[in-house]
Length: 271
DNA sequence: CTAACCTCCTGTTCGC
DNA sequence: TGCGAACAGGAGGTTA
Image (tube, rainbow, N blue to C red; front, side, top):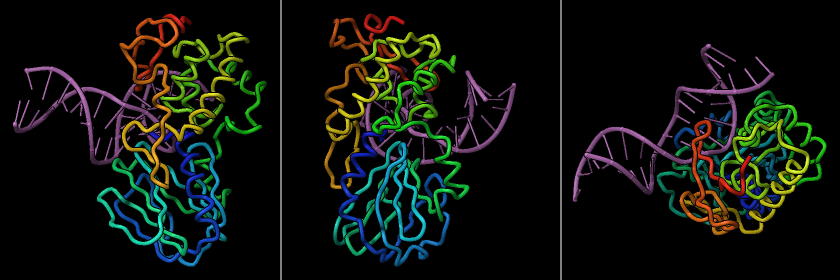
């Protein structure tokens, strides 16, 4: 499941190669989460100026307008030169002078949306409420601390909501909370200064480490050059229900929280 | 405003 | 061995 590290690793794996490319043709397959928002042929002859990321969205800047790409649950991109056979889950192609950017997404929770500008209503609806970027300088401790204080919801839900900090999905929320010694169900506002600070550091640390490891490949994630990630080998709690905690040996527990599974060590994460 | 739930989708896993 | 049910969850939308 692509979270921030997977999206960032994907971005880095094709951004330099696609920069300056001119669009030759566009293929749109089965419907994704939202419609493209323009006639596919309208994109022909546009030039890809750069690739940015905001939260889990990739922003493909064109010389006029931009494409918002989201990988959803099961999406991955490939960027390659030449032609290669399209599989049944390949639902979008952007063929350019430098190669073909192709979205593969079996479950089709992903999206490719064209907008005229980041200020367009559609873009604003999708991007406007996003929280701080954990890997950037705008991830500020005072703001994070204040955000926690302001919510009585369970800390894991606050992290997943993305209004305070973006990009933290189910895997990395569980891992960061383990590193900080905080139980996923703890009310955000009740977390003390020291542990809140530890969580702030843990989010940064786990995101940086995951990017360095190429993300997590649980089923079939790979970056746009086809390489898999390795962070899943380092997971302390995610997917380890019933296995001994790396720190204390207590068996890791899995509990439903909201509609999701949360993993934690009942001893290292007491409250 | 918040919080809980619903929804989209298909490959994989599980129970009988 | 087969087959349907349950599960996986990002995240916007809906409802209370």
